[in-house]
Length: 163
Image 1 (cartoon, rainbow, N blue to C red):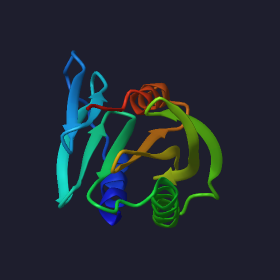
Image 2 (cartoon, rainbow, N blue to C red):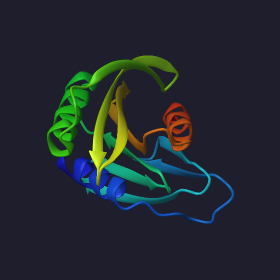
Image 3 (cartoon, rainbow, N blue to C red):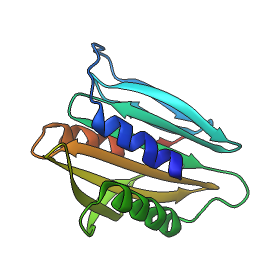
Image 4 (tube, rainbow, N blue to C red):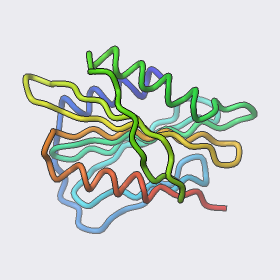
């Protein structure tokens, strides 16, 4: 889970842009499909056996989707708490607020964090869900008052698990 935090911090601190027009789809662990928003670039990384992530990066925001598989993946509450505490500590963020977010067709409890990078206000949303023998954790971060917020929240809603 530490790798997710490190990647998220790097993405938030170093925004970039891409010139793709069609939305692409990335498949993690053979079943979890993440739609890459237009003008976002992505990078897939394996975290070892039955664990992988994809990092999406745009001009004013970033998102990391981590998939834990195997015989005993963490449950969604454990994953959400661990990721939230790690980000809160590393980003020196305020106490997280509970919000509702759609993920995998269900409305689940998510966490919102507020923090600053180089004096600019940023926000992050963390959400987790279980599906089959997988735990999916999505972390999106965007510059406050940026249109990237809607893009990233829709990208979280678009995450799907195939058969």
